[in-house]
Structures are given as structure tokens and as C-alpha cells.
Length: 144
Image (cartoon, rainbow, N blue to C red; front, side, top):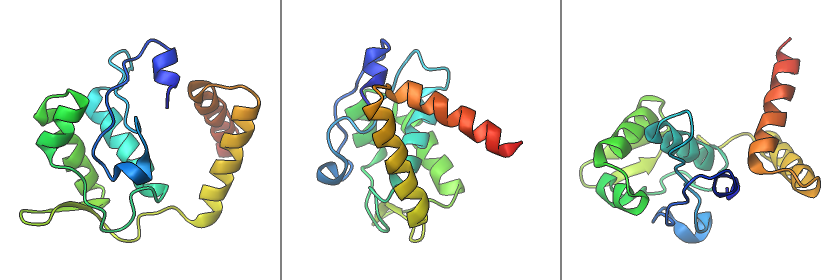
């Protein structure tokens, strides 16, 4: 996800989200991105959940911890968590914290195909942003 850095975005420090499974810099908030920070956090966490990086029952950091890690307001992260909960991806319990709901990973064939596409895009020298644009074109063509 260093494409944001290449396009002038700001890379935030790695989060505490199951860091060994995710790796450093897995959530990047780009202040120049057209979607706001809460939407960027929500969409990246959604991708990590659907991709199986955050498996069922994985515990997300507290709102305050993630906000501090990303240098965002706590309300911004709280909105992202609330949206994830409304979508059924996570559940929040006072004692248990925020955890990933079971059954949220993508079907294996879709994930495998996504990895094949990612490798092909990297081999072609595309940035993440360029690969996402190419995927959007393909998406639009299959919807017709």
C-alpha cells in the first residue's frame, strides 16, 4: 500500500492490528484522498477482513489505540468501527472489545483470483492505484 506514499499521501505508522499477520503499514490514511479518513479506515479494514488477514474472532485495537496509531481523532475511528458493525463485519462487546464476526472472509476462488491479478499488476510495474483503476474498468465492463 505504498502507492499512497508515491502519490504524495502520508503513510501512518503501523497499527496494532494483529501486526504479524498484517505487516507494517497495512492501514494508510491519505489526507488528499477524496474519501475521508473514516471511510479509508473502514474500507481497508473491510479488505483485511474479507481477505482473511483478520480472521474470525480477531480482536481489533481499541478506538483510542487505533486513532493514536494513525494520528486520527477517536471519533473518526469510532465512525469506521460503527460502520463495520452496521455491515455485520464486526461485533463490539464491552469486555471482549471489537472482534471480527465469523464467516466474513471471501470465498477462496475470489481471493485466489485477486492474488493472481495483484501479481500480474506488480509484474507489469503498475502501482496499487493504477491496478485499482484497471480493476474498476474491468468491473464496469462485466457489469454491462
